Amino acid sequence: MTAWRDRLSTLAQDRLPAEAAAKWIELFQPGIRLVSRGTGPRVGQLGGNPALPEAMEWPVWADRGPLTFVGAVDCATLPREFVTIPLPEAGTLLFFCFDGRFASADDEDHLPRDADGYRVLFVPAGTPVAERTPPSGLEPYPRREVFAEIAATAPEREHLLLDRTTVASGASLAEAVKDVLGPWRSGADVFGEMTWEINQGTPRHQVGGLAAPVQGAVENEVAAAVLEDGWDDPRLKEEAARWVLLAQFDSAEETDMRWGDAGMLYWLIRADDLRAGRFDAARCLMQCG
Image (cartoon, rainbow, N blue to C red; front, side):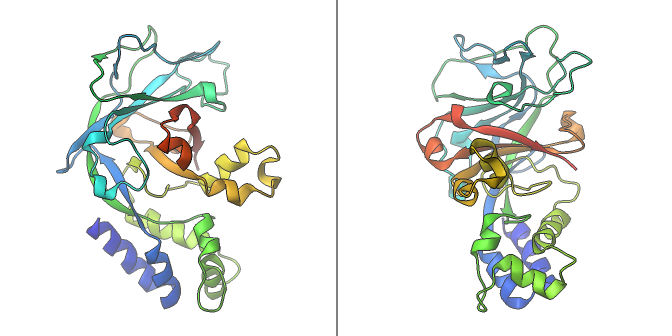
């Protein structure tokens, strides 16, 4: 994590007022990057065929088709000192998503918009499993083994921490940066530009930490999706604070994965549901440029 944190800290100190830079750096969190070339422990796979218990059915979106296997994470192999969310200490998480490749040509809804279009399955440690091929007609993505690499993640693009963290004047971190850079640039955009700059050319597959949003804060987006009044609900920020990033999967040439226009898939879950092992409560969303 040191190299990532140092690079991001240097950018912040160069481009932000000193107090704002220091406050933002305090908000950094480690994220476990899933990289196909690394020296860290093997922690799972992207694409390929999943290992499933014999009695576990392949997940399907009713009347639409089978879900595509995106990736798996072995919780026992994750570097625990850098895990920021209450994951199980052992067992495997498997991520599935309806990606449209099984859909008819006139089907425009190629990515999930409700809970039937994606799934997180948890296989407890010690459960007998076997590699399972996809249903007929569904080709798997190319398999890539992934290894753990620790990266510094930071709040950006309208994240609630930018509003809740204040500088000496009493202004929020987002406001303090906006005041210095001028009203024509959003403080959240400045933070996003810095995190994007140190990650150029590197797929941002990740477990835990803070999300790397392509657009606005994913926590706000998922809160709007579950609240009755959506974006107009007065409980939006309160609800957004309950959600944590479980995993994100980037578009990448090496896996042939394309989420919209070079976008990202995000799985989020309320921290209480994660502690209780209620993985069926996780929500998936996609953002792209």
